[in-house]
Length: 452
Image (cartoon, rainbow, N blue to C red):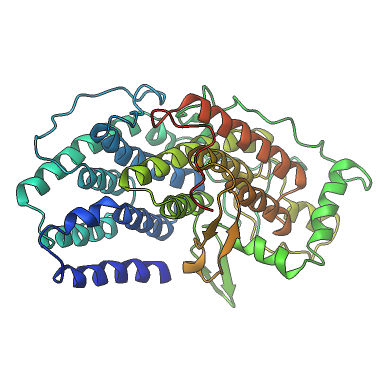
C-alpha cells in the first residue's frame, strides 16, 4: 500500500540522517511530536491492513492516544490527567525514575497499547523498533532510554487494564444481527452483501456520555413507498442528486468515502480496496492541525487524545441509533421502488442507514478540535493523498465536518435526515465533551488562532 511505503521511507531516511547528527540530537527529535505523528500514521496503516470496522478503529485510536497523553500529564502539571474524568478510568500511582524522558515514555505507551489492540502486531513492533534504534544511535543514554520505556509500559498497562473493562471482549460473542423482512428494515447490499457490522456497539462503555442514548435523535421519517410521501421524496432526492452531479460534488464524495469495506469485482474475482475509516481521517486531521499550530509532543498527545475520545463516544451514540431504527439504505429502496438499475456513487457500507456515521463522528471531532485550536483555523487536509486523492483546504473544522456530512448525500448512501440529525447529534456530543473533559489548565473555549 502506498501509505505503508511512505511511512517506511520516512523511517529509513531518518535513520540515514542519524549518523550526521550530534550525540544529543535525540532531544530535538523527541521534542516536536513528529515521532508521535509517525506512530499514529503507522497505526492507521495497520488498522487499514487489518480491516477494522469504524467503531472498532475508534476504540484502538482512543486507548492508544489516552496512553500517550497520560504520560504528558505526568510530566507537565499544566496538563490534567483523564483519570477521574473518563468513566471507569481510575487514578494510579506510578513508580517514576529520577532520570526519565517523558516524550519517549509517551511514545512507548502509545506503541504498547496500539500493538495490544490490533492483529498485525509485527507491523507496529517493526516500526517501533526502527524508531527506538534510531534514538539510541542519536546518542540517547541507555539508562535514560530504559527508564523512559519502563515508565511508558507502566502507563500502557494501566490503560490496557482500563480497556479490558469496556465490554468489548464480551461483545465478540454476542449474537449477530438477524436481517428482518420488514419493508423498512435494512438489508445487506451489493456487491458483497455483508452482515450488519457491530450491532451491539451501544453496549460498549462510553468514555464521557452517561449512556449510549444520551443524545438520541428524533425518529427517522416514517417509511412509505407511496409517491409524494416524505420518505419517498427523501429517496427521490438521493436519486435526483446523483443523476447530474458536478465534478466538485463527486470530488467531495470520494474524499470523504472512508469505507474500509469497499469491494471491487472484475469478472469472477472479488477483492477489497482498503480505505481509511472516518475516525482515521479525523485522527489524520488532528495530526495536521497539531503540526500546523506548531505544537510540541505534549500538545500533539493532547490533540490526539481529545479527538479520539470524541470519536469513541460518537460511534457508540451513532450505532445506538442505527440498530434501533435499522432503516433501509437508499440503494435498496431506490432499486426496489424507483429504478432497479440505479447505483450510488459510493459503495454502500454494511450497516443500517440512520443516522449518518460520518455526520455524527465528524461533527463531534470538529467540536473537540475547535475547542483546542479555535475558529477560524485554516488547514490543508492531505489525509487522503496516500490513497490517490488530492488535498482539500478548509477554514475551520466545522467547515470540514459540514462537507463530510453532505458528502453522504452526494455519494448516494444517506437520506438528508440522517445527515441533518446525525450532524446535530455529533455537535451536541462534542459540546458535552468540551464541558465535561479538561485536558489543560486554563484551556480557553476559543483557543488562540495559530493556524491562519
